[in-house]
Length: 74
Image (cartoon, rainbow, N blue to C red):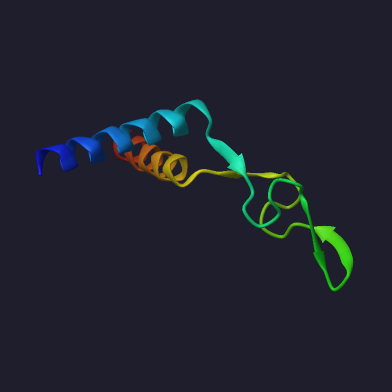
């Protein structure tokens, strides 16, 4: 039980460091190309709008927490 908790804390800690160091990841829909093929035509990816990257879930949660904290401490 203790080992499982330690592993969970270590995993979450590593993910938090990853989100701080590299907040953007390749888009999952277009695999980081910025384009998808629909109806035999190449189009701009609707998820990333051709930017090729997305914001990680952990970084998105951190940004929301910071906005809430900043709004509450003014």
